[in-house]
Length: 201
Image (cartoon, rainbow, N blue to C red; front, side, top):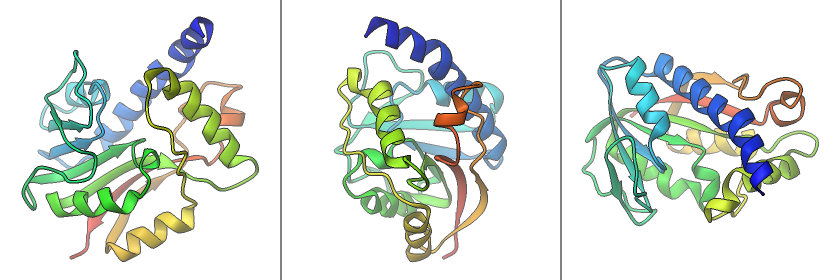
């Protein structure tokens, strides 16, 4: 397990933080206030703020860790303890597939966000996609006692949810370059997406 932790940390974790923070920093509208739902330790948030000091990010999680890089507020995993339209943007980074019903948090995110929702998550499409995503999830999260329901959606399920919630994708990317060669050939494919969604109502 120690060897696995080392390999994951060196080849995956550091690169993931760098790539996602850079991508989200470029994607986020100016002077945004963001609620990062399921933020973990907030390291990605810290890296975003370093690149975009005009952005303010508040973290929200079911477990507040001893060391966090941004302010993190505890919640019950379903009801977000903020008023309607309190933030410009709500954000989920690899969080919704850890829930039994992503629509619960998506509706809450829409409620507290004035304009935008940012989502980084997975697509359960293609050959062995479900098995690959399960393996990635287990390697990255099992040792941290993260709940793993393996609830991955297909692209058509995401599109249906966005339609029902009246959320319009204004940026959508499945080529995130999260992994180095050659492991990207197995773990990258089109299994990941990053989207900026705008409230249409």
